[in-house]
Length: 85
Image 1 (cartoon, rainbow, N blue to C red):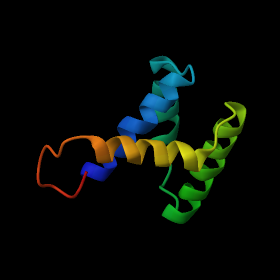
Image 2 (image 1 turned 45 degrees about the vertical axis):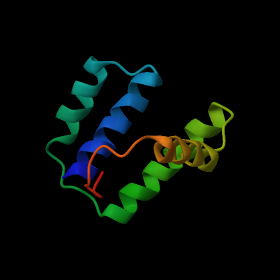
Image 3 (image 1 turned 135 degrees about the vertical axis):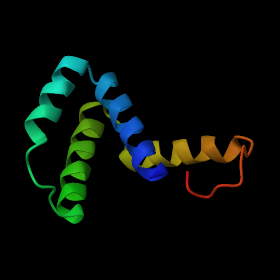
């Protein structure tokens, strides 16, 4: 459950950073609410494609951004004992 929350928070933050509005988000959620979820591997493929496009448009290396985030997190003091998040 923590991974789902973390993913959603990061996705929403990226969505907002790219100029997305809450109104647009609400419309997408309502539109998608009736559909059955697709297989995880297909969704991940679509997600990776979108991240690659966003990285290209913003002239950044997707993997370097991930390494930078990991480096920052490793420098933060440990606040708990959970390995889930």
